[in-house]
Image (cartoon, rainbow, N blue to C red; front, side):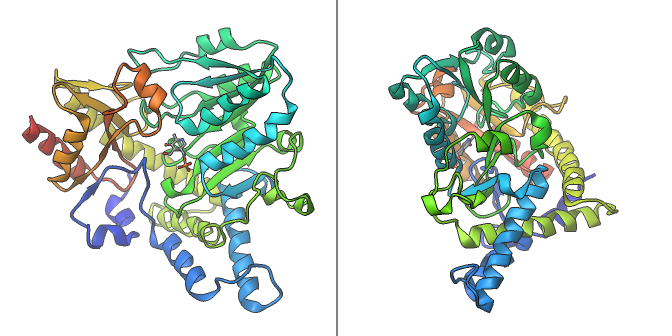
Length: 408
Ligand SMILES: Cc1ncc(COP(=O)(O)O)c(C=O)c1O
């Protein structure tokens, strides 16, 4: 079992100024453990110079950045050259769409969902202006779910790209990525997977996933603000370079036209120490970083499933609450990102009332505007969203339930 007290002891957040707050807005941004915070601070405090120049602090900075790329590649089961680290997922997908643009022929089809965050929709829809035909893989308006059979009907020999989320930041179901990518590959198309709401809960093996591109945001995976984009080497090679012409041979610049975020990338190396510390505490043993992190993610997901199920059981018991997505988490196919509405109450009022109980969560459409609208919910008010990760506790969930009960 996950020792949540030990996990929390790795974070200053839970003993600091807001220690008595229950933080349930992790799908918007997670806390940072000391193993990541310390190298971030050290970078900024001691060697914030132009990395890789031929003097000691610059070498130190370059080594920290190399470690960041190495650790991210190791966690994903990728080659370092396949990793781009840009300012955010939205910017990474935007740049990727620019790379795809000149390769499109009139009538080429791109499939997007209406379940995704706009980061994996808008940049693709813009390509309509270049002659691409955009098709929408739509959710069931009642359940919020995507049906793979609907995708199978949309895919054709004209499909060039399928862009979908591995887990919606509103609906929370974890998709069977390999079933989807198998369909896409059979059609000879490429796939772009948004893992922003997936990566805090599960560790993807990118090669095995069948995806061509996989994106997630490090500020939601226990690190500072940045966006990671993995591209399968063959798929990356087929796209025109988006960096300065003289950087053509630098793999990390291939899909990043701007300078990399030195300190943020440098801090990412600290994720190795975080997972290794947790792994050693939970039985330890030999293994690669990926194996150790994977073992921890298995414990995380067990714990998160218990938290999610406790909250869902309470929400299920209320006939004035609409739960978005699956109303049970027991089969492990639901992330602990739980959106709901309460009859007769604006979502913004519910979130504000919870704040009075020192419960931090939020409301709105969370940039999944199309998803919320398709669910028949007014995006202007949206849903209440409670999103939990491995450091949340059962006591916090009980406090939340108690607060929701008092608001009744
Ligand atoms: C599911 C999902 N995809 C994409 C994004 C966009 O990520 P970023 O803020 O790094 O651009 C978010 C951010 O909330 C998200 O939740």
